[in-house]
Image (cartoon, rainbow, N blue to C red; front, side, top):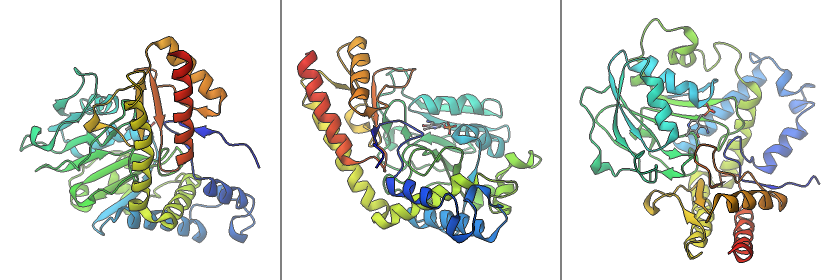
Length: 360
Ligand code: PMP
């Protein structure tokens, strides 16, 4: 058996071992076809079944009603920063809640297509928290409101589904499928696949039909959501391999008991780490305020940058990889997505105890 490490990478991130094993077993001949899924026409019946399995899996796992389309796009979540305003801003205004680096990027992209207005920003405070629903108010003429349910870099997460009187658009790249959400509170949710859904190269978009009807006419076909909705995500060649892995990840998650079951495991994993950080007498300092702590990306600091560097390199040598914080903020970030095993978190805590004892 090949040695696997504990991979705390923020994305592309750890995938379930059974998914990787199945992909390996089906690599040379996908279910008796004599070829790999990567070599197969996207117009074939077999691939049609794979796409339907991925879509149905996501629909069941997230309890998505029939008046929503589930689309598989390319261009990452970053393209959504532009596609959302391109399709729905129409030169008007939209309200953006900015709780971290990705939300800020979304605002910048939107300025090319209209007037995004920042209704909440956590920037002055170093992106440590999220607003409560009561603190938020939205302009009645806003075309939509946009927020990031989990800020991957800062480790900040909303604990509720934001509601508004205008369509709600959410970047859920780093916490989709990690906990139960009420889909009907959203009009469009998008997520790059490479954290909780599958490999990079696919972006899942879940969009309500009534919002699709408001899309701007005259856009280039591949930048218009309706093109993907009308053509079952295949106006052109999709990322067939990525969609195949998504179908396997959905099967894996359903076998495990679905989103409610993984949410319980995710809460346990995150608690182990946050509890230890809180009990470390300030040696490890969590970045996020308690009420906004992410279940997926646990961000913390050590007493000095030099210690942080040493921490990362020694952890890596001990088989705990990918712990370096994003280059823009530094510090440590442990990404513990759905497929990350609980024992990896326990190993990390043991390593942290040892490290602080030696370097206190
Ligand atoms: N939004 C969030 C919350 C992210 O974490 C990321 C990537 N880490 C992005 C957007 C950008 O995704 P992509 O690289 O797929 O464009």
